[in-house]
Length: 612
Image 1 (cartoon, rainbow, N blue to C red):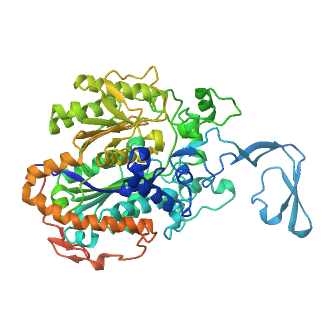
Image 2 (image 1 turned 60 degrees about the vertical axis):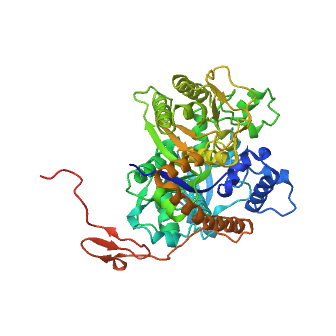
Image 3 (image 1 turned 135 degrees about the horizontal axis):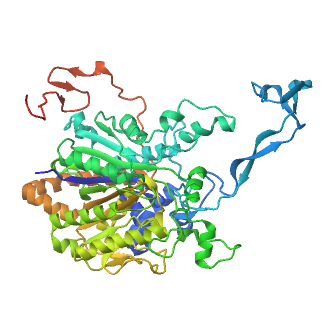
């Protein structure tokens, strides 16, 4: 019998705010929550944004979700570029002698001047690059809340932005779990733990690959950190080295916009098979950069200001509605790029009960399929039909046909592109039809958060766990109706928030469609259904014992929340602490003992194949 991967904690940071305490989710459905929950989340956002206590509600909320690009990352009205020109024959310029190129370009004739200067006469026509600026055609993005700077919360040492977001997000997941991690490690071997986290696009800002690629072209030097910190799996490396001190399995599985679900599939398989007992799964993505905006914009994938004006019948002199730039399943013109860092803590069911961990839900399965032969590598194909159908079938197998038909909903990929609205709605509609589902609820949280590329699946999961906790599925409020080419005969594409009872939704399908044919659909089980399954497997006594242990976990969670609100909690960043080498380990031929872990690494291995 397989072990069940239980979600025991979540953490991170998105345009909606801090993930722990369900604040990121609550920002999405704020107007549907009772008064205290609203006040708590507004206060959490105020603290996160470093605003004074007398800041108004409107001002606090204005710096969240999708909005006009701010100037903290770059100035979209004046992006630095170089314009190619040609200096004609006979052009003369004066340079500092220290800035004279070596070797001299062909055709340069130099004459020394006073004061360490050099006159250069260009004998032949010379191509040159002149610094200037351009205005971005795209000015909407899902930025982290205004004023929040993760790199300022610890000794970041010029870390790329997505790695600073990793430190914050993974720390948030661990801190909000309410678990004593040192005590937990006494129950585990290093091999019981794994971390799967990364970035679909790598670290492309100046402190990562971006700087390494363009430093010399900008007249600067490449640093020793830009190359190593740019690697896509560096998010997992940071969690191991500076947050957990883990020696277990590690890495990332990349799949464009489905990357989070690819990593979730790795964690699921590891726990289900019994190879690992604790897995941190996540992704951190910081793609709001001029070069990346231009890349997607050139593809015609991003919503431009001009396209938004055209959709809303505005003149060239009017500002578009940047808040509503992402319009899944409505009349739309492209996706809105975003940044986000989302992390889940998964445990096998036995360990979760043993330590009294919170039960936010469970990961039943993740299905991944490619598209097969394609005409365009970025176009959608047949693979997502397979992943959605397989996830629905697994939901039916676990919870029964009635649960799939009447107690399930979909978190759609919902990018806001014309192509996505047609293909994904068709896939979901066809699946609903063949499984006998009518009015299948469909949500799309990119309408609030934008598209965070590899971390997008984490945004969808965050919103799903919140819906089970507070009984509200976020509706798509950026559209005024469905586009004419959307297939919705068997769907209920939610345009307003949908209230649900805790027992009303047992299953959720998290869908992702990535460039290149990277399709993934995860099946999540509600906390109510998860507890029913745990009761069936472990019995009343085990569940009663879990309930008692969970009380102390809840108390620790409340303490963490108070610490976040009074700014006494900082991200975990243990630089140079507890460093181990070979001399720290105790070896024998049947085990390796590692300081800090209660169980040794087992070397009494069995041949997994046949004898010969």
